[in-house]
Length: 68
Image (cartoon, rainbow, N blue to C red):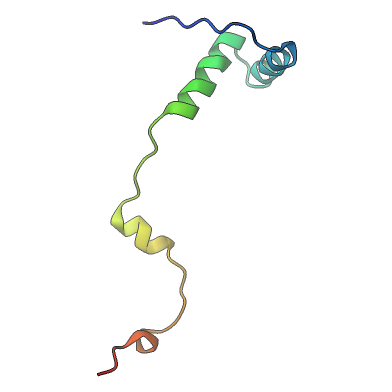
């Protein structure tokens, strides 16, 4: 597994990381990994069915009927 060193961080940022780590019950290093994973993880693509289900109901079918 690769190692990553982060230098020249503002002290307030390091303190915020440590505080967040305590809140989540893990080490600062584990919190740092979690933040990187969530920021860089690929987002799951919506399925077509989920995209359709997310569309708001904006009218009835007859409202969108073609007029010849």
